[in-house]
Structures are given as structure tokens and as C-alpha cells.
Image (cartoon, rainbow, N blue to C red; front, top):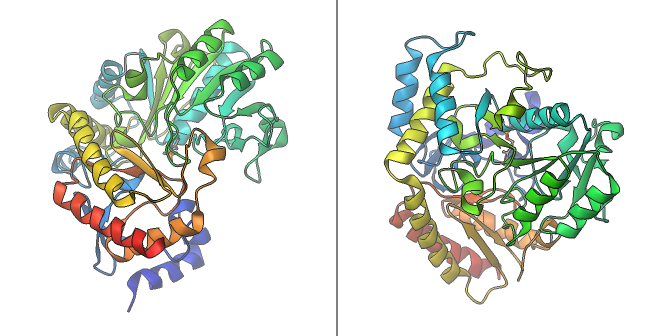
Length: 424
Ligand SMILES: *Cc1c(COP(=O)(O)O)cnc(C)c1O
């Protein structure tokens, strides 16, 4: 009997595609998803009682591993005093102060319930603040399912947007200009072609939604300068990288001060949380002080704040980011040994990594797309059958957590080696 299979059959009858978020459906690798009934440390237990070493970490939030007691205790304790008040609560103030302390470019911050809400609010605020409508984004950068941001380029760097999704009005997509990552010339040309019209440039400073690749030296600096010269805002979408790559996110590592930052994932400790913040002068444009409307019934929810605060406190207490760098570099050494002499590109920064199934290099989406998807699928299923769960898509990053011990990584490296032997 296969319980996951039966659950998926039932799910497909009542949930579109059987899932509440598309990548979970395994379309990127074929086969059917497994259902999870519990998770602890770096391990998942499936509905069929299989134990898996997990490198997805609920797509980023589980940076301490699954269900760390500091977070589950905070949730239990806070829940005893009520679940939601719809009035200001003390934990919101502590969360705002914590975010501003950890991410110095954020002078004021507002809490939301997802990364999508955070980026959507940044875009509206940038438009309201500048009085301009157009946005520049990068091919392959994902910013949640916001209408204006569900757009990627056609072939040319300055191709005006076509909707990536049915249901996004062309009129809206046309306001989004999409350019290749790591190409300053294309950004400069987009500014030149739209003088005085660009409200903001939005990007993942380390793109991690088309695999994983890095900004080249000078690229982020050039974007900062172009935005300042044009009175446009620079928005860093750090929903993935915030509180993961470093205490202050990618902006700390690369030494760039964006005008606005979108946050999510790690900040919620596994609960549905996002946040956006930046220069006080810009944030003060939000209602009720300013004319840009933004709101949320459950925003700043006490349980979610308690979970996020507990996770951030623990990361600071245990010097999580230096631990994660050690775990990441040990994982990298093992992985590089496993892939030696094979046409695979291994990328890593801190606790995030990716394997592209071709020689590389990978600097942007068009390179990432050269990865051999069929080989990746076979590799993925070999690993899964052997008890190691990597993201079910060649274009998703892998995540390490504090809970990945050296035994787990040794075992993973063995499984990777066997899988690669079977695939090549
Ligand atoms: C996950 C992600 C989002 C969307 O966050 P949700 O909570 O899924 O809405 C936005 N931007 C980036 C960079 C992400 O990785």
C-alpha cells in the first residue's frame, strides 16, 4: 500500500494539480510527490514512514532544521495567550526593532504574510513614491506571483514584457522591462530608452530561483549608481537570501544599500511571514501616514512574530551564519569530489547550492537553461529512492541547515556518487 499515492489521488480531485503551490507537484522531474507527516532536524518522515535527508528545508525557512525546540516552544507559549488580536501587539515592535538592527538599510519596516505580498508592496510603494509606473526586473529572478513581476523577457534585452502567466493584463506586463542578469549595458539601455519613467529596479541580489548564480563584481554597484542617478529606487528581494546568507543578508555581503528590501522565509521560522522595509522617507508614504495603501488582517500576527523572533535570536546566539558557512564548505568539498570529471557545474554561497548538469559557466538564466533536465530528473529520482531529497526541479537551489551533521553529509555524498554513476 502506498499512502502518498492514495493521498495524491484524493488531492487531485479537490485541489488543482493536487498541490497548493505548483513546484510541489514534481512536474519538473516526473513522478508523484510524496506526502510528509512530520519533520525534525534535517529529516522528513513521509506518510509511508520513509525517512529522507532534506535539502529543501521548506524552500528556505528551516535554517535551524525542522521544528527546532526554540521555535516550537515560542509558538506553544505565545499561543496560550491568544492567536490573533487585530490590534498592535508588543511582539511586532520587537520584530521591527530586530529587523532594523540586523539589516541597517531598513529604517522602518512593515510585516506581511508572504514574500509575494512583500515584493508587491515594494513595487506599489516605489511607484507611489516616484510617481512613475515602469519597473526593471531580470530574467530568471522570481519575486512571487505578483502580476507586474510574473514577466520575463523575450529574446532581446529590451523586449517589452509579455505575461508569463495567463491572467496578467498585457497593459500591466508592458510596464515591466526585463533584462538579462549581470548585464549592466542592458540595464543602462533600458534606463536610456525610458527616461524619467523607471520607478524601480527589482532583483534577487543572488538569484536563487533559476538554480543559483552570483552577481559579478561591479554589477550591484552599477545598479545602485544607475538608480541613484535616475532617482529610481533599488529594491533587493531578499526573501530567500535575507537572514540566510548573513545576518544582514546579501546586501551585507556585497556592501550595497538598497532603498527597499523584501523579506520572507527565514524571518517566519516556518510560519507564513513576510516583511518589507527601507528608507524611512519612502516607508512614510504608506497609509495611514501617506497615500500608498497597504494592509493585512493577520499581519504582525503574534504567533508568527514569536516564531520568527525565536529563530532569529537562536541564529545570533549560536553564530548560525558562520556555522552554516562551515557546513556549506564541507558539503561543497564532498559534492565536488562526487562530481569530479563530470560535466556538472556546482555553485554555492553559504548554505545555498545548486548543481547544473552541464559544464557552465552560469551567469544568467540563458546559461541555466542549458542544464540537462533529463539527466537531472534521473539523478533526482535515484537520490530520492536512496533517501536524499533534493528540490524536485533543476532550477531550484538546495538549502543546508544547522541540523545537517557531518554524518548526514557523508551519507548524502555517497548517495550522490551512486546516483551520478547510474546517470552518466
Ligand atoms: C519565495 C520567494 C518569493 C515569494 O515568497 P512567497 O512567500 O512564496 O510568496 C519572492 N521572492 C523570492 C526571491 C523568493 O525566493
